[in-house]
Image (cartoon, rainbow over all chains, first blue to last red; front, top):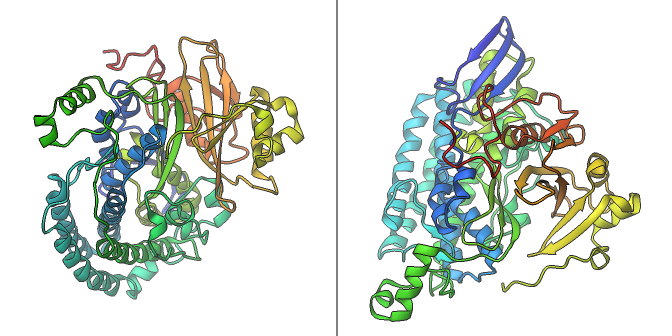
Length: 384
Length: 165
């Protein structure tokens, strides 16, 4: 029987359509059908200036908007050859790790909810509320912050921000203990997740999986540690790796990542350097408001950057970062003008979704829900 | 850091493991190379792309075992119009390389690399959908993002940003 697990479904984490060929409860074939959230962001980017693309990038993977921002601005800064001051780099790492925790909280809440553990959802969203308030404090926006700009950050972090972050970092590890208490040793959770949706390491690499989907199968590769960017060399962190390649291994990887991320946030707050938050590049970075209101050159630069953009030397760049889902990359081709010639987003979830047939064929229908949750897909990133 | 000028002379770049492996196998497959902003791009000849990918995947010095991305750039109106771009990553050596294949605009077609990395499946479907490039040997070459009955290739440069109503 062909069954349609349609785009409107509470467990598909977005508008994902799965065409299932089933024999009773067993899956014979599974075929994902995507494109319901396609908004043509790649085409839109070609019509905007480089700095105007930054808010578009937030909305691609909407659960980790700051990570998308970071990837894009790092790519453009590589094209321009800009040197970013250390304070901006450390702030970027700190906010990136808070975003990772944010995204993993949504993952844990919705994954557990699909499998049936409804309490975890509300617990996770309680902590997520604190993080969203931190983002609102620093950038004015809860989710689509666009806080990272080409050349540094948009605004100075306000007074009292680092105290709030330190406070949150002190409270959070015990909350992760709460979630683990509810799930890790729970026999029902174990029966639903151990041995379910297994994928071997060779299959995962061949199918292009990355992030916890790859690390759950035993491959120890993390872009933050192995190909560091934006100051990650200065941080000490462990990378949790699973062995079995099943849903439980990926769950343990992500919970471990939450703990490592909060430790990194603490390291960032304690070691935060002083200094400017924007690079010195008058033609690219907007000048300070006071300077713009009092100095003629600053006013002219401000006007030119906003109305004409800044020309980026011709060339191409591929910058990848470790998003909560895997390797997110931006391939930007510049032709020397102020608008990008081609912006391509390498979506971690699109490659991870390719592992779904291998994981689910031959298994039960209920395991599909667990598998989708464990890959942690966000349709905004898949469809762009 | 400040930009260095790009190196485009293949002679100077011969030492790079990917270029050395491709030149040793078939010198005609490397049409050109560029080292710019610390990234290596290799222009590969169209008919040898699948074998070149297999060679690089199994290269003992630097095995590029992971296909990160397959995408395309449309250089309309200049010819060759399309440039299909492959991004490879080596997990063990932590190196990236970019392979580029130039195609004419007439009826662009290329060999699929799904036999080398099954990861190319969705990426090539997306390039087919949005640019109209056919991949020979792809197991299921259908539109992936646009609806099945859509006409046209939206990401081409002669397709308007606003779309057609």
